Image 1 (cartoon, rainbow, N blue to C red):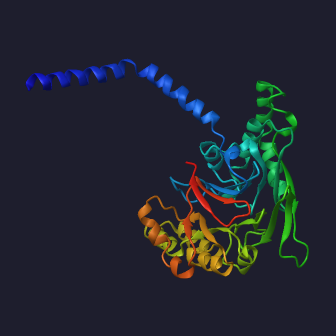
Image 2 (cartoon, rainbow, N blue to C red; image 1 turned 90 degrees about the horizontal axis):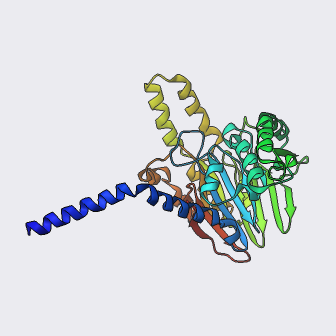
Image 3 (cartoon, one colour; image 1 turned 180 degrees about the vertical axis):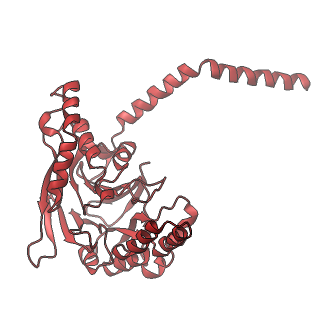
Length: 357
């Protein structure tokens, strides 16, 4: 028995020793295999006909180790539209297998920093990853011209470095940066089509995020399926009107009670500036219960909460965050997380769920 035990010990030591000795070649093979798998991954090309919504960022300006800044990807017929581009979201696209080079256009709901601070990276990755010979169209309300122009100026030196390094055939000079596509609503008009091509229609509608103005939401329609993004807004009938039986409503959400707890903690810590900010932000956002009421009024088939405020680093906090939602809306409610995928097959009623992270 002792000999058997000693033999097993020697065998274990040999295995450990071999692992240490051959760590480099083992790592080399694992890396090559992982790279081959990652490069061959083509999520966009494998998606069936329909509308597909991927959450590339479900967070907010508040620190959250599990969520990037606001960003949703809408994939239709191999074209990808990005709604807002928050910090870290473009890296999430890469991790999710969604090539930024496939981006048809970026749509901005408004110009708060957390919705635009990933734009520069998206422009760069679309250019580098897609070999585009025309800049990224940025569809947004009037005022976007200054933002796009500023980013183009900020990245001007970087653009020249990359052309010089990789050559014009790889990095076409005309494809760098972005181009503003501003719109404004005609007097008295509550909705406006801002993109229509190949059966894809995108409609913008104004929302209430005062003092931030303009601020809008978007509705996507394609082959009998529809998705609505609320943008940042206080509870507003216009969102329910835009939904009007939509398949998927992606709505921002702020739990005012939890933010109030944070405000008290800041007060006890003597951080008066943060107390003021915590007391201000609930009045231009929508609570989870109010978002659920909007989903019910708009007859949405599914509600997805995103732009989650505050951060929810523990799953245990989710029930607290969603308290009262079930009583306000009897459809399925999903608390958005980065990497979630919602697929709406063309000319059907189903909503299929997946995870790309």
